[in-house]
Structures are given as structure tokens and as C-alpha cells.
Image (cartoon, rainbow, N blue to C red):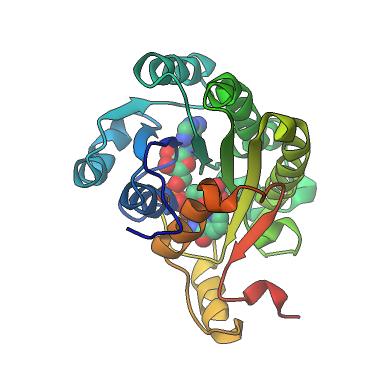
Length: 259
Ligand SMILES: NC(=O)c1ccc[n+]([C@@H]2O[C@H](COP(=O)([O-])OP(=O)(O)OC[C@H]3O[C@@H](n4cnc5c(N)ncnc54)[C@H](O)[C@@H]3O)[C@@H](O)[C@H]2O)c1
């Protein structure tokens, strides 16, 4: 076991596993390897079959349905964690959604409904999750929340559309919640990976071009993997990251520094 990143005795909630390729699969693997006990959520019954191999491999006992557009499913998960573990040390928010037209069309043309849906699932769900788990983290003497963002928050990435606005708000929420929850020893961070091919990414037009540019232009000429993201995230939620909060942490082979 990594002597610096030790999550033994910690209970963590991992959202957003759709399949083996999901970013949160890499996060779950890294956290399990570091000794954490994991509670995993999946969006609906259809995704359950795809996450089965992941939870079996990692020996996860608690896997629950949670659709962030259905508040009762979030409360149910929190209640189950309270009943089973009595505390929560960390929670990973790794979910996003926008309608195809809003992703690919002009931001200028986004409908009020499309904008609200994208913001609700991709951004405000992080705020709601933080509020829902705050008491469980207080019971643990503190905690750590991590969300997944993308460079499209600060730079214009063609075909990222409304999701760029969602990620900008998500990063601002990270800073504000870090301020608000810091006194309770609850840390809030965002991880910003470079592009990697996942189910969500496959819905973004021109994504192959983004990956090609990442290899060509990043200082390290490399593509990020779920394992790379898992390694950073496990560090952030561990005691090794105890004074790190409010930040956006890139894991992108340095692509973000290029002009
Ligand atoms: N793939 C990339 O290149 C990349 C880069 C930077 C950031 N991200 C971010 O990483 C996060 C995870 O995405 P991924 O790339 O692993 O793709 P993914 O498709 O594997 O995961 C997206 C997850 O969001 C979940 N989700 C969507 N709507 C939901 C809802 N209503 N309730 C509950 N869950 C819901 C899906 O079930 C899925 O598990 C997203 O926030 C994404 O924006 C991805």
C-alpha cells in the first residue's frame, strides 16, 4: 500500500460509475487500493449491469441507485450510509449531463430548460450532495468532497457549449463551499482531467481531435487515464491532503499551461 495515501478506516461515496472506462472507476480503484470502504452509486437499473464487474472486482458491498434529478434517491443513499457506517469521510461527484443540442449548439441558443437541466445535473447536484453528506462528515470529524471539472470552464472548447458554463459554476461552487465548510474541517476540491474517452465524452463532437491535440501539445505528450485521475483524487481525500481545499487541480500532462 502507498505509505502516503492511506485511506484505511475511511468510508467513501463514489458516484458516476457508468462502466469500466468511467473516471470514477479509476477513482474507486485507487481508493479501494488505499484501504477505503466504498459505497458506490449508479444512475439507473440499466447501468447496474455495467458496474457489476467493477464492484465485484473491488469487493464493494454497498451499491445503490442514485439519480440526482430524483432527490429522494439521494436521501435514501445518505440514510443507508448513516445506518451502515454512521459517518462519511469523503464523497466523489463525477456526473454531468447536457442535451446533445445544447452541447453542440451555440451557448447563445440554449433554451431555459436545457440550460437548467445541464446546470442541475452537472453543477447544482454537487451543492446538493455536499449539503446531504455534511452531517455525516461532521460525525467523522471532517471530510473531503471532490468533483470532476474540465478546462472548458475557462477556455472556449468548440462543441463543449453549455457544459463550459456548468464547469465554470462548478469550480466557483468548489471555492465557495470550501470557504463555507472549512471551519467544519470539510475540504472541497475539483480535479480537472485532460480528455479521455468515456461514455460521456463520446457524446461530444470532435472529441478525437481534443485527444489528438492533448497528445501533440501537452508538455508531456500523454493522454490521461482513469488511474492517473484516481491517484490524484485518492491523495486529495487522504490525510496527506489535509490542508488542500478550494482548488482546481489539473491532471492533464500539463496541457492547461500551453498558450
Ligand atoms: N471524459 C473526459 O474527457 C472528462 C474530462 C474532464 C472532466 N470530465 C468529467 O468527469 C465526470 C465523469 O464523466 P466520465 O467522463 O467518467 O463519463 P461517464 O459517462 O463514465 O460518467 C458520467 C456519469 O454521470 C452519470 N449521470 C448523468 N446524469 C446523472 C443523473 N441524473 N444522476 C446520476 N448520475 C448521472 C452517468 O450515469 C455516468 O455514470 C463528468 O463530470 C465529466 O464532465 C470528463
